[in-house]
Image (cartoon, rainbow, N blue to C red; front, side):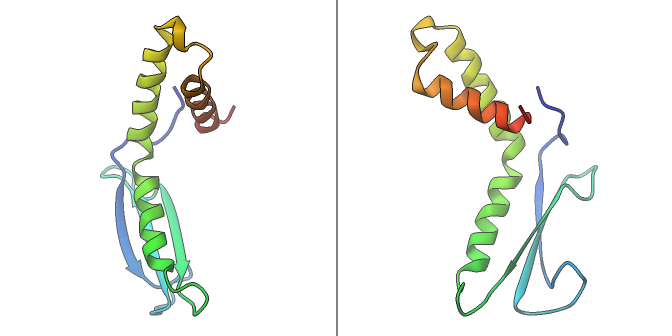
Length: 106
């Protein structure tokens, strides 16, 4: 298993940019835990060309925050697939192995 900050990861939303400037054009989503104050930062600017930036940013923050649970669930599914030789070279096995390798930096 890869070494990452233990979950669950939480999301805090705030207004302003990463330089501390208060602005209504930018939102930040900070991903952290109860015991580690900062895991990741996502920042989105709302512009005329990107009116849905905040909805997209919020969705991306939720996906990032779910990463530890998704990793554990995928690893468990991968282990189940390994138990059945019928799935050894199947598409689901390849996809699971590739995603786990990516998460582990392989």
